[in-house]
Image (cartoon, rainbow over all chains, first blue to last red; front, top):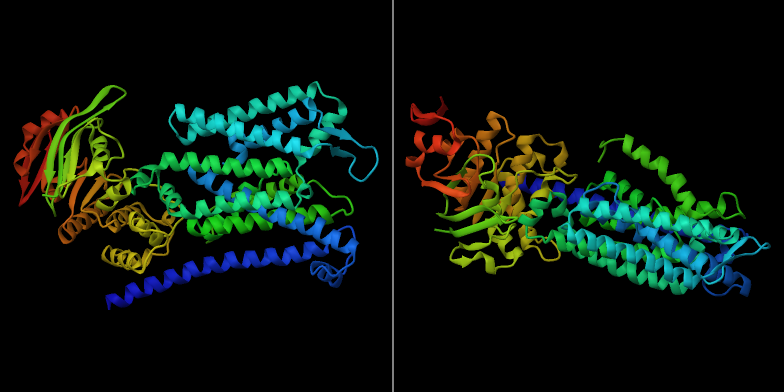
Length: 357
Length: 250
Protein backbone atom coordinates (compact mmCIF):
# COMPACT_ATOMS: atom_id res chain seq x y z
CA UNK A 1 0.00 0.00 0.00
CA UNK A 2 2.69 2.45 1.12
CA UNK A 3 4.82 1.42 -1.83
CA UNK A 4 1.98 2.47 -4.11
CA UNK A 5 1.73 5.93 -2.55
CA UNK A 6 5.44 6.72 -2.82
CA UNK A 7 5.33 5.41 -6.39
CA UNK A 8 2.55 7.91 -7.09
CA UNK A 9 4.57 10.77 -5.63
CA UNK A 10 7.46 9.86 -7.85
CA UNK A 11 5.33 9.57 -10.99
CA UNK A 12 3.80 12.96 -10.19
CA UNK A 13 7.22 14.44 -9.71
CA UNK A 14 8.52 13.02 -12.99
CA UNK A 15 5.51 14.46 -14.77
CA UNK A 16 6.20 17.81 -13.14
CA UNK A 17 9.85 17.92 -14.21
CA UNK A 18 8.96 16.56 -17.63
CA UNK A 19 6.61 19.49 -18.12
CA UNK A 20 9.48 21.88 -17.39
CA UNK A 21 11.68 20.23 -20.00
CA UNK A 22 8.82 20.45 -22.47
CA UNK A 23 8.34 24.18 -21.85
CA UNK A 24 12.05 24.85 -22.33
CA UNK A 25 11.97 22.88 -25.56
CA UNK A 26 8.89 24.75 -26.79
CA UNK A 27 10.55 28.13 -26.19
CA UNK A 28 13.57 26.90 -28.10
CA UNK A 29 11.31 25.77 -30.95
CA UNK A 30 9.60 29.16 -30.91
CA UNK A 31 13.01 30.83 -31.16
CA UNK A 32 13.85 28.73 -34.20
CA UNK A 33 10.56 29.72 -35.85
CA UNK A 34 11.26 33.36 -34.99
CA UNK A 35 14.76 32.98 -36.41
CA UNK A 36 13.32 31.72 -39.70
CA UNK A 37 10.91 34.63 -39.78
CA UNK A 38 13.73 37.09 -39.03
CA UNK A 39 15.76 35.60 -41.86
CA UNK A 40 12.94 36.44 -44.24
CA UNK A 41 12.19 39.88 -42.86
CA UNK A 42 14.17 43.01 -43.63
CA UNK A 43 14.56 46.06 -45.77
CA UNK A 44 15.38 44.01 -48.87
CA UNK A 45 12.39 41.98 -50.02
CA UNK A 46 13.41 38.38 -50.41
CA UNK A 47 11.11 35.43 -50.96
CA UNK A 48 11.49 32.42 -48.66
CA UNK A 49 12.70 30.42 -51.67
CA UNK A 50 15.45 32.96 -52.35
CA UNK A 51 16.50 32.95 -48.69
CA UNK A 52 16.56 29.16 -48.69
CA UNK A 53 18.72 28.93 -51.77
CA UNK A 54 21.06 31.59 -50.37
CA UNK A 55 21.35 29.57 -47.16
CA UNK A 56 22.54 26.64 -49.24
CA UNK A 57 24.94 29.01 -50.99
CA UNK A 58 23.07 28.64 -54.28
CA UNK A 59 21.72 32.19 -54.58
CA UNK A 60 23.38 35.00 -56.48
CA UNK A 61 26.16 37.01 -54.87
CA UNK A 62 23.97 39.80 -53.60
CA UNK A 63 21.55 37.33 -52.05
CA UNK A 64 24.31 35.35 -50.38
CA UNK A 65 25.80 38.50 -48.89
CA UNK A 66 22.46 39.64 -47.47
CA UNK A 67 21.66 36.28 -45.91
CA UNK A 68 25.10 35.14 -44.78
CA UNK A 69 26.76 38.44 -43.88
CA UNK A 70 23.88 40.56 -42.67
CA UNK A 71 20.85 38.62 -41.54
CA UNK A 72 22.26 35.33 -40.23
CA UNK A 73 25.01 36.90 -38.08
CA UNK A 74 22.44 39.29 -36.68
CA UNK A 75 20.12 36.48 -35.68
CA UNK A 76 22.95 34.41 -34.20
CA UNK A 77 24.35 37.41 -32.30
CA UNK A 78 20.93 38.31 -30.88
CA UNK A 79 20.30 34.76 -29.71
CA UNK A 80 23.74 34.25 -28.16
CA UNK A 81 23.86 37.67 -26.49
CA UNK A 82 20.33 37.15 -25.15
CA UNK A 83 21.38 33.82 -23.64
CA UNK A 84 24.45 35.38 -22.04
CA UNK A 85 22.70 38.41 -20.54
CA UNK A 86 19.79 36.34 -19.28
CA UNK A 87 21.78 33.59 -17.52
CA UNK A 88 24.11 36.23 -16.05
CA UNK A 89 21.08 38.00 -14.57
CA UNK A 90 19.59 34.70 -13.39
CA UNK A 91 22.58 33.67 -11.26
CA UNK A 92 23.29 37.20 -10.06
CA UNK A 93 19.75 37.44 -8.68
CA UNK A 94 20.34 34.14 -6.92
CA UNK A 95 23.77 34.90 -5.47
CA UNK A 96 23.02 38.45 -4.40
CA UNK A 97 19.59 37.29 -3.13
CA UNK A 98 18.14 40.34 -4.81
CA UNK A 99 15.50 40.22 -7.55
CA UNK A 100 16.78 43.44 -9.12
CA UNK A 101 20.34 42.23 -9.55
CA UNK A 102 21.58 42.29 -13.11
CA UNK A 103 24.89 43.15 -14.76
CA UNK A 104 24.17 46.87 -14.39
CA UNK A 105 23.72 46.47 -10.62
CA UNK A 106 27.44 45.88 -10.32
CA UNK A 107 28.22 48.89 -12.51
CA UNK A 108 29.40 46.75 -15.42
CA UNK A 109 27.38 48.58 -18.08
CA UNK A 110 28.39 51.99 -16.74
CA UNK A 111 32.02 50.92 -16.72
CA UNK A 112 31.72 49.81 -20.35
CA UNK A 113 30.08 53.10 -21.34
CA UNK A 114 32.90 55.00 -19.70
CA UNK A 115 35.45 52.89 -21.55
CA UNK A 116 33.67 53.62 -24.84
CA UNK A 117 33.59 57.33 -23.97
CA UNK A 118 37.34 57.35 -23.43
CA UNK A 119 37.90 55.74 -26.84
CA UNK A 120 35.46 57.94 -28.73
CA UNK A 121 36.22 61.25 -27.04
CA UNK A 122 39.79 61.09 -25.77
CA UNK A 123 41.22 58.72 -28.39
CA UNK A 124 39.18 60.10 -31.30
CA UNK A 125 37.62 56.81 -32.39
CA UNK A 126 34.28 58.27 -33.50
CA UNK A 127 33.14 60.61 -36.25
CA UNK A 128 30.08 61.79 -38.17
CA UNK A 129 29.11 61.19 -41.76
CA UNK A 130 26.52 63.51 -43.18
CA UNK A 131 25.41 61.04 -45.83
CA UNK A 132 24.23 57.46 -45.66
CA UNK A 133 21.55 55.72 -43.68
CA UNK A 134 23.39 55.77 -40.38
CA UNK A 135 24.74 59.26 -39.94
CA UNK A 136 27.09 58.37 -37.13
CA UNK A 137 29.78 55.80 -37.52
CA UNK A 138 32.50 54.59 -35.26
CA UNK A 139 35.87 54.84 -37.04
CA UNK A 140 37.68 52.27 -35.03
CA UNK A 141 35.16 49.82 -33.58
CA UNK A 142 37.90 47.62 -32.17
CA UNK A 143 39.41 50.38 -30.04
CA UNK A 144 35.95 51.15 -28.66
CA UNK A 145 35.29 47.47 -27.93
CA UNK A 146 38.62 47.05 -26.19
CA UNK A 147 38.28 50.15 -24.00
CA UNK A 148 34.64 49.29 -23.19
CA UNK A 149 35.77 45.80 -22.18
CA UNK A 150 38.54 47.22 -20.01
CA UNK A 151 36.07 49.62 -18.35
CA UNK A 152 33.63 46.82 -17.58
CA UNK A 153 36.25 44.44 -16.21
CA UNK A 154 37.88 47.21 -14.19
CA UNK A 155 34.54 47.87 -12.49
CA UNK A 156 34.12 44.20 -11.69
CA UNK A 157 37.59 43.83 -10.25
CA UNK A 158 37.17 46.90 -8.03
CA UNK A 159 33.74 45.74 -6.83
CA UNK A 160 35.03 42.27 -5.99
CA UNK A 161 38.06 43.71 -4.20
CA UNK A 162 35.91 46.10 -2.16
CA UNK A 163 33.52 43.28 -1.33
CA UNK A 164 36.43 41.12 -0.28
CA UNK A 165 37.54 43.71 2.28
CA UNK A 166 34.11 43.94 3.92
CA UNK A 167 33.43 40.21 3.69
CA UNK A 168 31.74 38.88 0.57
CA UNK A 169 28.16 39.71 1.53
CA UNK A 170 25.51 40.54 -1.07
CA UNK A 171 24.97 43.94 0.52
CA UNK A 172 28.65 44.86 0.26
CA UNK A 173 28.67 43.86 -3.41
CA UNK A 174 25.54 45.76 -4.34
CA UNK A 175 26.67 48.90 -2.49
CA UNK A 176 30.10 48.79 -4.07
CA UNK A 177 28.55 48.24 -7.53
CA UNK A 178 26.05 51.06 -7.21
CA UNK A 179 28.74 53.45 -5.96
CA UNK A 180 31.13 52.55 -8.75
CA UNK A 181 28.39 52.70 -11.38
CA UNK A 182 27.49 56.25 -10.46
CA UNK A 183 31.16 57.19 -10.33
CA UNK A 184 31.66 55.96 -13.90
CA UNK A 185 28.46 57.66 -15.06
CA UNK A 186 29.73 60.93 -13.59
CA UNK A 187 33.11 60.49 -15.27
CA UNK A 188 31.34 59.83 -18.60
CA UNK A 189 29.31 63.02 -18.19
CA UNK A 190 32.46 65.04 -17.51
CA UNK A 191 34.08 63.60 -20.64
CA UNK A 192 30.98 64.45 -22.68
CA UNK A 193 31.06 68.01 -21.36
CA UNK A 194 34.43 68.58 -22.94
CA UNK A 195 33.61 66.72 -26.16
CA UNK A 196 32.49 68.01 -29.54
CA UNK A 197 28.93 67.51 -30.82
CA UNK A 198 30.14 64.80 -33.14
CA UNK A 199 31.85 62.87 -30.38
CA UNK A 200 28.83 63.10 -28.10
CA UNK A 201 26.60 61.88 -30.93
CA UNK A 202 28.94 58.95 -31.58
CA UNK A 203 28.96 58.01 -27.92
CA UNK A 204 25.18 58.19 -27.62
CA UNK A 205 24.91 56.05 -30.74
CA UNK A 206 27.32 53.51 -29.28
CA UNK A 207 25.49 53.22 -25.96
CA UNK A 208 22.17 52.50 -27.73
CA UNK A 209 23.18 48.94 -28.42
CA UNK A 210 23.01 47.48 -31.91
CA UNK A 211 23.06 43.79 -32.75
CA UNK A 212 24.14 44.57 -36.32
CA UNK A 213 27.65 45.43 -35.15
CA UNK A 214 28.60 41.81 -34.67
CA UNK A 215 30.32 39.92 -37.46
CA UNK A 216 31.10 36.20 -37.44
CA UNK A 217 34.42 36.73 -35.63
CA UNK A 218 32.73 38.45 -32.72
CA UNK A 219 29.93 35.91 -32.67
CA UNK A 220 32.49 33.12 -32.32
CA UNK A 221 34.07 34.84 -29.31
CA UNK A 222 30.66 35.46 -27.71
CA UNK A 223 29.58 31.86 -28.32
CA UNK A 224 32.75 30.52 -26.75
CA UNK A 225 32.53 32.72 -23.66
CA UNK A 226 28.79 32.24 -23.18
CA UNK A 227 29.10 28.50 -23.80
CA UNK A 228 31.82 27.99 -21.19
CA UNK A 229 29.95 30.13 -18.67
CA UNK A 230 26.72 28.21 -19.28
CA UNK A 231 28.42 24.86 -18.70
CA UNK A 232 30.04 26.16 -15.54
CA UNK A 233 26.67 27.33 -14.23
CA UNK A 234 24.99 24.03 -15.07
CA UNK A 235 27.74 22.19 -13.19
CA UNK A 236 26.93 24.35 -10.16
CA UNK A 237 23.14 24.24 -10.45
CA UNK A 238 22.66 22.34 -7.17
CA UNK A 239 24.72 24.94 -5.36
CA UNK A 240 22.44 27.76 -6.48
CA UNK A 241 19.40 25.83 -5.27
CA UNK A 242 21.10 25.40 -1.91
CA UNK A 243 21.86 29.12 -1.72
CA UNK A 244 18.19 29.89 -2.44
CA UNK A 245 17.40 28.04 0.79
CA UNK A 246 19.46 30.59 2.73
CA UNK A 247 23.18 31.03 3.22
CA UNK A 248 23.28 29.01 6.45
CA UNK A 249 21.43 26.12 4.87
CA UNK A 250 23.78 26.14 1.88
CA UNK A 251 26.83 26.02 4.13
CA UNK A 252 25.25 23.19 6.08
CA UNK A 253 25.01 21.31 2.77
CA UNK A 254 28.72 21.80 2.19
CA UNK A 255 28.52 24.71 -0.25
CA UNK A 256 31.34 27.25 -0.20
CA UNK A 257 29.04 30.24 -0.63
CA UNK A 258 31.70 32.98 -0.65
CA UNK A 259 33.87 31.32 -3.27
CA UNK A 260 30.94 30.57 -5.57
CA UNK A 261 29.72 34.13 -5.20
CA UNK A 262 33.08 35.58 -6.23
CA UNK A 263 33.50 33.22 -9.18
CA UNK A 264 30.00 33.70 -10.53
CA UNK A 265 30.12 37.48 -10.15
CA UNK A 266 33.36 37.50 -12.08
CA UNK A 267 32.01 35.16 -14.79
CA UNK A 268 28.73 37.03 -15.16
CA UNK A 269 30.55 40.35 -15.41
CA UNK A 270 32.99 38.91 -17.92
CA UNK A 271 30.33 37.73 -20.35
CA UNK A 272 28.40 40.95 -19.90
CA UNK A 273 31.60 42.89 -20.63
CA UNK A 274 32.18 40.87 -23.80
CA UNK A 275 28.61 41.31 -25.03
CA UNK A 276 28.34 45.00 -24.15
CA UNK A 277 31.70 45.87 -25.67
CA UNK A 278 30.69 44.23 -28.97
CA UNK A 279 27.04 45.28 -29.14
CA UNK A 280 26.62 48.29 -26.83
CA UNK A 281 24.34 48.49 -23.82
CA UNK A 282 21.26 46.29 -23.92
CA UNK A 283 19.12 46.59 -20.83
CA UNK A 284 16.37 44.49 -19.24
CA UNK A 285 17.14 41.11 -20.83
CA UNK A 286 19.01 40.08 -17.66
CA UNK A 287 15.91 40.90 -15.61
CA UNK A 288 13.14 39.80 -17.95
CA UNK A 289 14.44 36.41 -19.05
CA UNK A 290 14.97 34.94 -15.60
CA UNK A 291 11.91 36.59 -14.02
CA UNK A 292 9.51 35.32 -16.66
CA UNK A 293 10.87 31.82 -16.33
CA UNK A 294 10.86 31.94 -12.52
CA UNK A 295 7.14 32.68 -12.72
CA UNK A 296 6.53 29.86 -15.15
CA UNK A 297 8.87 27.14 -13.87
CA UNK A 298 9.71 28.10 -10.29
CA UNK A 299 13.15 28.65 -8.79
CA UNK A 300 14.82 25.26 -9.40
CA UNK A 301 18.09 26.16 -11.12
CA UNK A 302 18.40 22.78 -12.78
CA UNK A 303 15.66 24.03 -15.09
CA UNK A 304 15.77 27.76 -14.49
CA UNK A 305 19.25 28.24 -15.97
CA UNK A 306 18.53 26.59 -19.34
CA UNK A 307 15.05 28.14 -19.37
CA UNK A 308 16.45 31.63 -18.74
CA UNK A 309 18.96 30.99 -21.51
CA UNK A 310 16.41 30.17 -24.20
CA UNK A 311 14.03 32.86 -22.98
CA UNK A 312 16.78 35.50 -23.07
CA UNK A 313 17.78 34.43 -26.57
CA UNK A 314 14.18 34.50 -27.70
CA UNK A 315 13.51 37.93 -26.19
CA UNK A 316 16.56 39.61 -27.68
CA UNK A 317 15.92 38.04 -31.07
CA UNK A 318 12.31 39.21 -30.92
CA UNK A 319 13.38 42.72 -29.86
CA UNK A 320 15.88 42.96 -32.66
CA UNK A 321 13.39 41.70 -35.22
CA UNK A 322 10.90 44.31 -34.06
CA UNK A 323 13.61 46.98 -34.14
CA UNK A 324 14.39 46.06 -37.75
CA UNK A 325 10.86 45.72 -39.07
CA UNK A 326 8.51 48.03 -37.17
CA UNK A 327 9.36 51.16 -39.15
CA UNK A 328 11.56 49.60 -41.84
CA UNK A 329 13.84 50.61 -43.47
CA UNK A 330 14.77 52.55 -40.33
CA UNK A 331 16.42 50.26 -37.77
CA UNK A 332 15.67 51.27 -34.20
CA UNK A 333 18.35 50.76 -31.54
CA UNK A 334 17.63 47.40 -29.95
CA UNK A 335 18.45 48.70 -26.45
CA UNK A 336 15.52 51.11 -26.74
CA UNK A 337 13.20 48.30 -27.89
CA UNK A 338 14.14 45.99 -25.02
CA UNK A 339 13.44 48.80 -22.56
CA UNK A 340 10.16 49.74 -24.27
CA UNK A 341 8.97 46.15 -24.22
CA UNK A 342 10.70 45.24 -21.02
CA UNK A 343 9.48 47.91 -18.65
CA UNK A 344 5.73 47.34 -19.07
CA UNK A 345 6.12 43.57 -19.15
CA UNK A 346 8.21 43.71 -16.03
CA UNK A 347 5.68 45.84 -14.19
CA UNK A 348 2.96 43.44 -15.30
CA UNK A 349 4.92 40.52 -13.87
CA UNK A 350 5.36 42.36 -10.58
CA UNK A 351 1.69 43.24 -10.20
CA UNK A 352 0.62 39.70 -11.01
CA UNK A 353 2.16 38.57 -7.73
CA UNK A 354 3.07 34.98 -7.11
CA UNK A 355 0.04 33.42 -8.74
CA UNK A 356 0.19 30.58 -11.19
CA UNK A 357 2.73 27.83 -11.51
CA UNK B 1 29.30 7.31 21.23
CA UNK B 2 29.16 9.03 17.88
CA UNK B 3 29.66 12.76 18.41
CA UNK B 4 32.36 14.04 20.67
CA UNK B 5 33.20 17.72 21.01
CA UNK B 6 36.52 18.38 22.67
CA UNK B 7 37.69 21.73 23.96
CA UNK B 8 35.97 24.02 21.43
CA UNK B 9 36.96 27.65 21.72
CA UNK B 10 35.61 30.42 19.50
CA UNK B 11 36.20 34.17 19.39
CA UNK B 12 34.42 36.84 17.42
CA UNK B 13 36.44 40.01 16.76
CA UNK B 14 38.78 39.12 19.62
CA UNK B 15 35.89 38.67 22.06
CA UNK B 16 35.64 35.09 23.36
CA UNK B 17 32.20 33.60 22.63
CA UNK B 18 32.83 29.95 23.55
CA UNK B 19 35.38 28.56 25.95
CA UNK B 20 36.36 24.99 26.71
CA UNK B 21 33.26 23.24 25.41
CA UNK B 22 33.39 19.48 25.97
CA UNK B 23 30.59 16.97 25.59
CA UNK B 24 29.57 13.86 23.72
CA UNK B 25 26.33 12.44 22.36
CA UNK B 26 25.39 8.82 21.68
CA UNK B 27 23.49 7.38 18.75
CA UNK B 28 19.75 7.76 19.11
CA UNK B 29 20.16 10.36 21.82
CA UNK B 30 18.84 13.94 21.87
CA UNK B 31 20.94 16.59 23.60
CA UNK B 32 19.29 19.96 24.18
CA UNK B 33 21.45 23.06 24.51
CA UNK B 34 19.81 25.48 26.94
CA UNK B 35 20.68 29.03 27.83
CA UNK B 36 19.77 32.68 27.48
CA UNK B 37 19.93 34.65 24.25
CA UNK B 38 23.54 35.44 23.43
CA UNK B 39 24.95 32.59 25.52
CA UNK B 40 26.57 31.14 22.37
CA UNK B 41 24.13 28.32 21.59
CA UNK B 42 23.85 28.95 17.84
CA UNK B 43 27.59 29.63 17.62
CA UNK B 44 28.24 26.25 19.21
CA UNK B 45 26.04 24.45 16.65
CA UNK B 46 27.82 26.22 13.78
CA UNK B 47 31.20 25.28 15.20
CA UNK B 48 30.21 21.61 15.20
CA UNK B 49 29.65 21.45 11.44
CA UNK B 50 32.36 24.02 10.73
CA UNK B 51 30.17 26.76 9.31
CA UNK B 52 32.27 28.71 11.80
CA UNK B 53 35.86 27.80 12.37
CA UNK B 54 36.68 27.44 16.06
CA UNK B 55 39.98 28.81 17.27
CA UNK B 56 40.80 25.67 19.21
CA UNK B 57 39.33 22.25 19.83
CA UNK B 58 38.19 19.30 17.75
CA UNK B 59 34.99 17.50 16.84
CA UNK B 60 34.99 13.74 16.33
CA UNK B 61 32.30 11.76 14.58
CA UNK B 62 32.66 8.00 14.88
CA UNK B 63 36.28 8.63 15.80
CA UNK B 64 37.07 10.74 12.70
CA UNK B 65 38.35 14.26 13.16
CA UNK B 66 35.70 16.37 11.44
CA UNK B 67 38.05 19.25 10.75
CA UNK B 68 40.24 17.13 8.52
CA UNK B 69 37.29 16.43 6.20
CA UNK B 70 36.10 18.52 3.25
CA UNK B 71 32.92 20.54 3.69
CA UNK B 72 31.14 18.11 1.37
CA UNK B 73 32.18 15.14 3.49
CA UNK B 74 31.09 16.98 6.63
CA UNK B 75 27.69 17.58 5.03
CA UNK B 76 27.37 13.83 4.44
CA UNK B 77 27.78 13.18 8.14
CA UNK B 78 26.18 16.21 9.78
CA UNK B 79 22.69 17.40 8.91
CA UNK B 80 21.86 20.98 9.80
CA UNK B 81 18.61 22.91 10.00
CA UNK B 82 19.25 26.62 10.43
CA UNK B 83 17.10 28.91 12.54
CA UNK B 84 15.98 30.96 9.57
CA UNK B 85 14.95 29.27 6.38
CA UNK B 86 13.92 30.83 3.11
CA UNK B 87 10.77 29.31 1.70
CA UNK B 88 11.69 29.79 -1.94
CA UNK B 89 9.85 28.94 -5.11
CA UNK B 90 10.80 25.27 -5.22
CA UNK B 91 8.63 22.26 -4.54
CA UNK B 92 8.76 20.21 -1.37
CA UNK B 93 10.16 17.27 -3.35
CA UNK B 94 12.99 19.40 -4.73
CA UNK B 95 13.69 20.94 -1.31
CA UNK B 96 14.13 17.49 0.22
CA UNK B 97 16.11 16.30 -2.81
CA UNK B 98 18.47 19.19 -2.09
CA UNK B 99 19.41 17.35 1.10
CA UNK B 100 20.99 14.72 -1.17
CA UNK B 101 23.32 17.37 -2.58
CA UNK B 102 26.40 16.27 -0.64
CA UNK B 103 25.94 12.80 -2.18
CA UNK B 104 25.05 13.87 -5.72
CA UNK B 105 27.63 14.06 -8.48
CA UNK B 106 26.25 15.47 -11.72
CA UNK B 107 22.66 14.25 -11.47
CA UNK B 108 20.48 12.72 -8.77
CA UNK B 109 20.43 8.92 -8.95
CA UNK B 110 17.57 6.46 -8.53
CA UNK B 111 18.83 5.87 -5.00
CA UNK B 112 18.60 9.59 -4.19
CA UNK B 113 15.04 9.69 -5.49
CA UNK B 114 14.13 6.62 -3.47
CA UNK B 115 15.51 8.10 -0.24
CA UNK B 116 13.57 11.31 -0.83
CA UNK B 117 10.35 9.35 -1.41
CA UNK B 118 10.84 7.34 1.77
CA UNK B 119 11.52 10.40 3.88
CA UNK B 120 8.52 12.24 2.45
CA UNK B 121 6.38 9.23 3.28
CA UNK B 122 7.73 8.79 6.80
CA UNK B 123 7.12 12.47 7.64
CA UNK B 124 3.62 12.41 6.10
CA UNK B 125 4.59 14.95 3.48
CA UNK B 126 3.42 12.96 0.44
CA UNK B 127 0.45 15.18 -0.23
CA UNK B 128 2.66 18.26 -0.25
CA UNK B 129 5.39 16.92 -2.49
CA UNK B 130 4.49 19.14 -5.44
CA UNK B 131 3.55 22.23 -3.43
CA UNK B 132 5.88 25.23 -3.44
CA UNK B 133 7.63 26.04 -0.16
CA UNK B 134 6.23 29.58 -0.09
CA UNK B 135 2.71 28.13 -0.01
CA UNK B 136 3.30 26.11 3.16
CA UNK B 137 2.39 26.92 6.74
CA UNK B 138 5.12 27.32 9.34
CA UNK B 139 4.67 23.80 10.69
CA UNK B 140 4.71 22.24 7.23
CA UNK B 141 7.82 24.20 6.25
CA UNK B 142 9.63 23.11 9.42
CA UNK B 143 8.85 19.48 8.65
CA UNK B 144 10.28 19.94 5.15
CA UNK B 145 13.46 21.49 6.61
CA UNK B 146 13.89 18.51 8.91
CA UNK B 147 13.14 16.14 6.04
CA UNK B 148 15.90 17.81 4.04
CA UNK B 149 18.39 17.40 6.87
CA UNK B 150 17.38 13.72 7.20
CA UNK B 151 17.88 13.25 3.46
CA UNK B 152 21.55 14.01 4.04
CA UNK B 153 21.57 10.62 5.85
CA UNK B 154 23.67 12.11 8.61
CA UNK B 155 25.00 10.45 11.74
CA UNK B 156 24.59 13.72 13.59
CA UNK B 157 21.69 16.14 13.26
CA UNK B 158 21.97 19.77 14.38
CA UNK B 159 18.71 21.69 14.83
CA UNK B 160 18.68 25.38 15.68
CA UNK B 161 15.41 26.21 17.45
CA UNK B 162 13.34 23.77 15.36
CA UNK B 163 10.08 24.69 17.11
CA UNK B 164 10.40 28.37 17.97
CA UNK B 165 7.92 29.67 15.39
CA UNK B 166 5.38 26.88 15.72
CA UNK B 167 2.05 26.54 17.48
CA UNK B 168 1.52 24.10 20.35
CA UNK B 169 0.35 21.18 18.22
CA UNK B 170 3.10 21.57 15.65
CA UNK B 171 5.76 21.86 18.36
CA UNK B 172 4.92 18.45 19.71
CA UNK B 173 4.49 16.93 16.25
CA UNK B 174 7.84 18.22 15.02
CA UNK B 175 9.61 17.07 18.17
CA UNK B 176 7.94 13.67 17.85
CA UNK B 177 9.35 13.41 14.33
CA UNK B 178 12.82 14.31 15.59
CA UNK B 179 12.60 11.81 18.45
CA UNK B 180 11.42 9.00 16.16
CA UNK B 181 14.10 9.79 13.58
CA UNK B 182 16.80 9.76 16.26
CA UNK B 183 15.68 6.33 17.47
CA UNK B 184 14.95 4.68 14.11
CA UNK B 185 17.92 6.04 12.20
CA UNK B 186 20.27 5.99 15.21
CA UNK B 187 21.16 9.64 14.82
CA UNK B 188 22.76 11.75 17.50
CA UNK B 189 20.69 14.94 17.72
CA UNK B 190 21.94 18.23 19.13
CA UNK B 191 19.34 20.95 19.29
CA UNK B 192 18.94 24.45 20.62
CA UNK B 193 15.67 25.00 22.43
CA UNK B 194 14.08 27.78 24.44
CA UNK B 195 11.03 25.90 25.66
CA UNK B 196 12.25 24.11 28.78
CA UNK B 197 9.13 21.98 29.10
CA UNK B 198 9.45 20.78 25.53
CA UNK B 199 13.10 19.98 26.19
CA UNK B 200 12.14 18.04 29.31
CA UNK B 201 9.65 15.99 27.32
CA UNK B 202 11.84 15.07 24.40
CA UNK B 203 15.54 15.47 25.20
CA UNK B 204 17.58 12.73 26.83
CA UNK B 205 20.32 15.03 28.01
CA UNK B 206 20.72 18.72 28.71
CA UNK B 207 23.58 21.15 28.36
CA UNK B 208 23.37 24.49 30.13
CA UNK B 209 25.38 27.19 28.40
CA UNK B 210 26.15 30.37 30.30
CA UNK B 211 28.48 33.16 29.14
CA UNK B 212 30.12 30.88 26.60
CA UNK B 213 30.96 28.01 28.93
CA UNK B 214 29.20 24.86 30.06
CA UNK B 215 27.44 25.50 33.35
CA UNK B 216 26.25 21.94 33.72
CA UNK B 217 25.57 18.94 31.50
CA UNK B 218 23.78 15.67 32.14
CA UNK B 219 20.45 13.82 32.26
CA UNK B 220 17.24 14.75 34.07
CA UNK B 221 19.19 15.16 37.29
CA UNK B 222 20.69 18.47 36.12
CA UNK B 223 17.29 20.05 35.50
CA UNK B 224 17.11 21.41 39.02
CA UNK B 225 15.53 24.71 40.07
CA UNK B 226 18.97 25.80 41.24
CA UNK B 227 20.65 25.23 37.85
CA UNK B 228 17.82 26.75 35.85
CA UNK B 229 17.66 29.80 38.11
CA UNK B 230 21.41 30.32 37.86
CA UNK B 231 21.48 30.01 34.07
CA UNK B 232 18.33 31.95 33.20
CA UNK B 233 18.42 34.43 36.07
CA UNK B 234 14.82 33.76 37.07
CA UNK B 235 13.60 31.65 39.97
CA UNK B 236 11.66 28.52 38.99
CA UNK B 237 10.29 25.37 40.47
CA UNK B 238 10.37 21.94 38.83
CA UNK B 239 7.30 19.84 39.59
CA UNK B 240 5.82 16.61 38.39
CA UNK B 241 2.38 16.61 36.84
CA UNK B 242 1.52 12.95 36.91
CA UNK B 243 4.64 11.52 35.36
CA UNK B 244 5.62 14.60 33.41
CA UNK B 245 8.22 16.97 34.81
CA UNK B 246 7.40 20.65 34.25
CA UNK B 247 9.28 23.88 34.86
CA UNK B 248 7.23 26.74 36.24
CA UNK B 249 8.66 30.23 36.71
CA UNK B 250 7.82 31.68 40.11
